[in-house]
Length: 133
Image 1: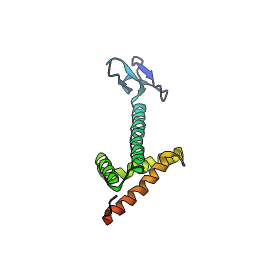
Image 2: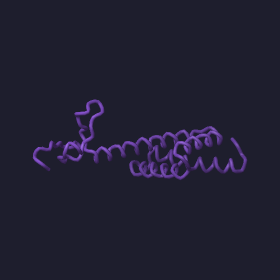
Image 3: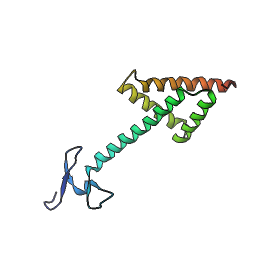
Image 4: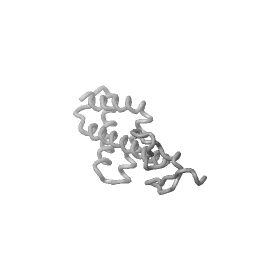
């Protein structure tokens, strides 16, 4: 690095880097964010994953208490639209289940996710046979 180039320390990784490695603050274009771009990207990935998992956990809790198979079907339609299809929905569900199991194996979220899968199977079988309710 040239001696004239200004540097800043990242509050996450602690490395000293040129100012160009830090994002500009939205409110003041001259000020820079406290974390470097790489650390900021990692923080945002973690944040989005957590937010997604919370959404799936809430869905699993709603699914567990759904009054009938029509309500389950309606919830599934809503989530499939949100995720853009069954494959992305299943990947997100599995990711949430793996994270919940790693964090607390016998916890409420893990239980809701597993009960939600059972409820989905029961509702799917009933709707397939033409039984509603």
